[in-house]
Image (cartoon, rainbow, N blue to C red; front, side, top):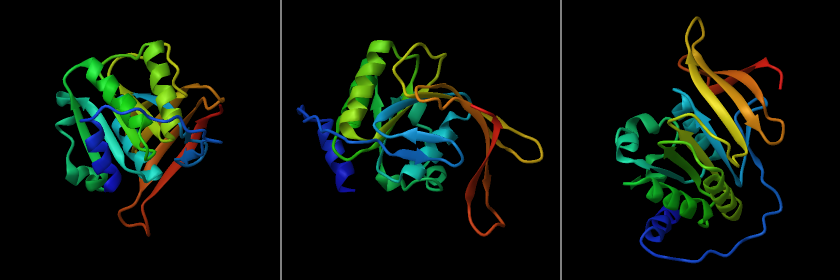
Length: 210
């Protein structure tokens, strides 16, 4: 909670951050071969990108900063989010322009606290913009998820994921990594196991080899 309060204060002050040398970037394990490197930004697209983001931040377990235009974040429901993360450990930042979204995201990624930062981006990031966010994530040591509401472009993101829901006998999602700087490319079907089982778990099946 203290980190969230500090983050709130940071958006009302201008400060200079000190670059920290991070020896390595542990991954966030979503099961199977699905890992998201800390100290990096990752792009997510598709109708089920929100579920991917929530599962990722739940696995990460740190405070969350969720940034977007009003139309993209005003429908977030604490009752729905609490199955994945504590709403009291989440800070919603509402921007009124594209420039404000990028500025707020860069500050959140760079801030002490290694936050999980989710950016609702109305269009694609340029290569220059993505590089700035990538450098900020490296400094802060957390990780960023950029949810693109339009087709992606060339960027400096570590990975890019296409996330879609699937129905049938076992409903769930298909997570397809279409870009991976370290060979993460592949496709996995994910489903939640719960409601009648001993515990809620995330089950993944590799549908194609990387």
